[in-house]
Length: 500
Image (cartoon, rainbow, N blue to C red; front, side, top):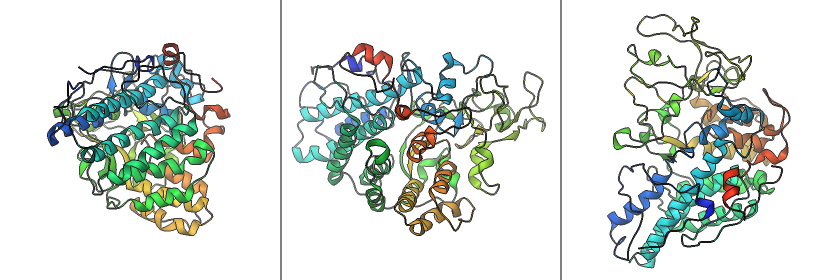
């Protein structure tokens, strides 16, 4: 029986995997080198790494990537999204108000949830690498497997680099010691090295939802795009170079095909996290976190649609920032909500009509109807709480917009034009003659609305630190989150991020 590593860092990170992979049997231990020698056994092992991307919930944290914690952490701290407190609903100890006002605490559950999502995934990958090490495979056979696993782990560390900065780098499954912080520069270098060293062994062809060369190039492009924000070193040309290595993808004609229930057929999605309710996957319920409790009657005359939690809404000003002809505006639900059974506006328990309004007069004491709602992923009758659409992580539109932004930053806005034109044309819009950083910033919000990446854009453009809606000036140290309080209490070798 192999030795199991449980360090203080992972006391609040390790979990018993309960998600079922679509093509996977879960193996947590290997007794000798007799396992991992056949393609099906290797696939089962590697499948555990992909399964980890769907996250978990264990009573300590709700660490699903599309949940009201991990996803909302990056959304609500941006200029895109707010979770109004509606009576006693969505107060949650005030953490969503603190997220909106950039006054979060190291004890807030949403911060712990994001940390545990990443480190639980890392622990799973490290355990699988250990099992591959002990298998009877040849070094040549192991190389592409290691590349895939290291790339998945690099994705988790990219998220930690972005959100927490100075985090421990743990790669040895057998190491029993308490890890210390690495600097943000060291984490950056680790992500870059892992991806670059994995690239020669990754598959060149498109393999849906798997880490291939294209995915590695896209992640490196993200790393270089945010390099100045992460480590103070601009790498705009490197970002362009990585983007130009991505091949085989194109924009879908229909923008919303990327967010349909059967979105695995999209030729635009570079990386997604697959879900299938019938196969038992869990954690894919973000579409129920935004609309009003009675919204189901706008989907089905019998209300044959999962309950909604009346939470996340667009910040005031977001909806009106879209041109009326912009098809992407339909990612939001606004105005009167019609009961399909009666043909009349739904009446809330208060006796008032259900009309989603852009303005939110008081987000700390809001009425049930205020706020434009999330409607990006397809909603249809008969759906279960656990949705079947795959969670989009990287789209080809991002590859286009990264190049456009970098060309503008390098002083060549004319070279940005063809990339922006593709995105705008698909949205049904013309492209302005002048493309500057302010335009790029706003176009990114329009194109990637509710996709969990806006906080990172805000930091890169500097708008994160400026006064905004229900927000004063933000101190620079809040560009990264604090290490969770419970993690610090279980590992005395860790130091809190500066400023907290």
